[in-house]
Length: 237
Ligand SMILES: [Zn+2]
Image (cartoon, rainbow, N blue to C red):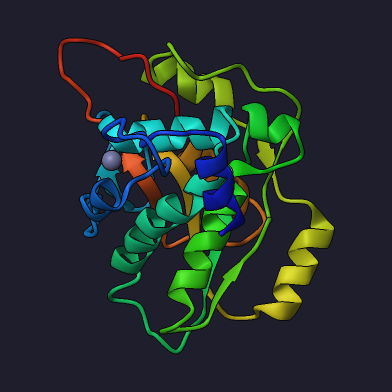
C-alpha cells in the first residue's frame, strides 16, 4: 500500500499504457499472462533442467523488470512475483505436493536495487513464495552467491554468456548447512527474472549440483523470444 501511495504521490504513470496514476494500472495488470510454458533457449545449454517462463520479455513485462531492477520501482515485485509464481506452479504441477518447494534465487549481478542493498531477484522470489504458500509448503533459500563481478551479459551471444558466467556462482557451506537442517527433503527450483540464453540458469544449476543438490526445474518471470537469423538482441539474462 505504501508503494502505491508513493507512486500516486510522485505522479507516476502505468508502464504498460502510460496512463497517469499507478505504475501498473488495473487493466494492464489484468492483461499479464497467467499460464507458464516451457521456455527452452536456442541453443539449449547442455544438461539444463526444464525451464519454465510465464511471459515473453517485451512490452509491459520488460518495463516492469527493468523498472524493478534498475529504476528503484520496487512495488513491481508483486506483479513480477505473480508471474514467477505461475512459472513455479507449472514447473511443480507433477511433483508430490507433500514435498516442500524450495525456491533458490539466481544471484543478482547488477542494477540500482542491488547497489542500494535491495536484491531484486530475491524480492521477486519472496513475493512468489508468499502467493504459492496457500497450497503447499514453499521456502526460499539464498543458497547462491556470485564470486566477484561478472561482466554485464547484455550484448553477449549465447557462447560468450556461457563463458562469462561459468564457475561464477558458489554455495557457501553455512547456508547449505542451514538449508539441509531446515529442509531435509524438498524440490529445488532455480528462480530468475529473465531467461535469455539459459547461461545464468545453467550456472546456478551447476553450483547447486556441485554441493549435491539437484534442482528439478528453472522458473522465470519471462523469457526472451530468440529470433533466428537476427543474432542476439539488446537483452540481458
Ligand atoms: Zn496500463
